[in-house]
Image (cartoon, rainbow, N blue to C red; front, side, top):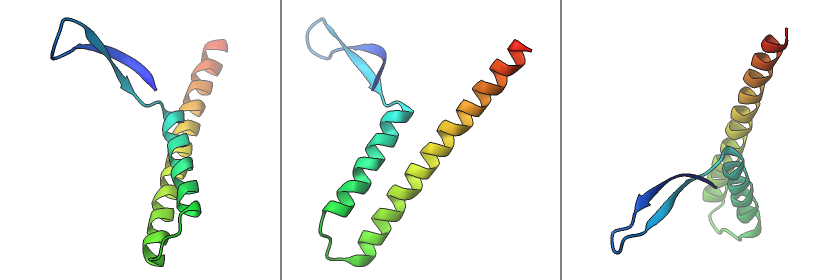
Length: 82
């Protein structure tokens, strides 16, 4: 989780932080979800397959996003150095 700002609370005079997930937090959440699917006994095999596919696809897409960003950063750093 990453703090991205603060918001005034509805009652009182304080503020509360506003959070957003990081890409690594999202990846960990999908890995946990996939493990939960394997640990849970689901009677409907089609539903089980569907949930596994969603979790696997999300993990793959998240990893692709991380690698794409790292590649762009490495390319920028390489260009700056040379």
